[in-house]
Length: 396
Image (cartoon, rainbow, N blue to C red; front, side):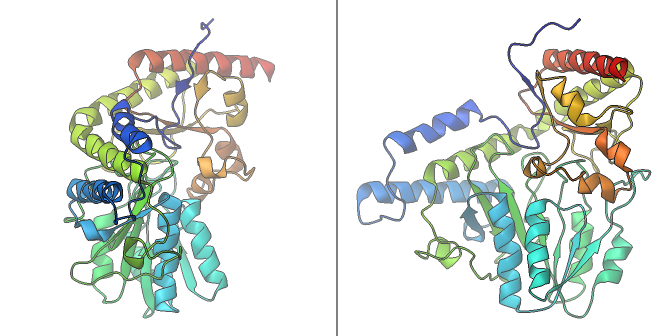
């Protein structure tokens, strides 16, 4: 019998992450003393707040290998995705867009709305779960999907459910062969977890948020490339003309400062944490699979960090309903899929896209590790899950 756990074991880091204490410390002064509106530049406190924002903007640009003026601050990745997709489409007026069936709801939703407005959208399939490249797109199908009026390709860099990494550099090269195609990526799960330099990766637009890399909730950004050909968008948020007219609304100074530091810490500490996280994830899977008698993996193999995030595990518990397993293991925080669709009873569209049948989807769980997880936690989680699986099997 596994002992009671006083503090829940958090393995849902694709949904959100704990604030790094160093980030909290950096944000506190902006709540207590440097709280002025960064747009109130007629007095000293407003000017200081503006300087803090611009310093953070430079810090983010330096971390990602871009220019400061290429970033628009938003409320998070959902707003960034909406601004990128709808802002570019409204500027274009009409035409053809290509995306992927396994995208995050904050990409699928705006594109479906654009479809209703008359834009044509092609949804690329992904390779089946039986493939070593499970969850990736077939680049030949991308080439075949491009039409004379294609103006936008949107492909998530790293998937939030199965951790698959798309071949984004090759996608960009394909699109560059024809003038007039912009490439957008939702890099929410990739920033701070993968080596990512915008002076090397030729995407035109990139969305991300702070709370997936131990920063605060409620703040994110959209990268809009200015070099070579400048990305111009119709703003989604109208108001006071902030962010050079690209996004109206008072900026979240503490959030922006926190995001900049969280990103810098994640990128600087990535080399030392990469292998550590991978080993911890593999230990979790191997011990759990042994304890319960085998767990089929959803997505690419775990042994290829070029194709799968090292902190991601999505696997099946054959014969066990995933939701029931979580109810029977209240000491553990994990999920059956995207947090944005947790209240939706529909099965995971990502797993369905890879060809899993309803029973396989229903018995699947997603685990996401972070720098704050320990071996002791992982071993305890294995015990808790194994006990719950045994209990559920006895009940059936």
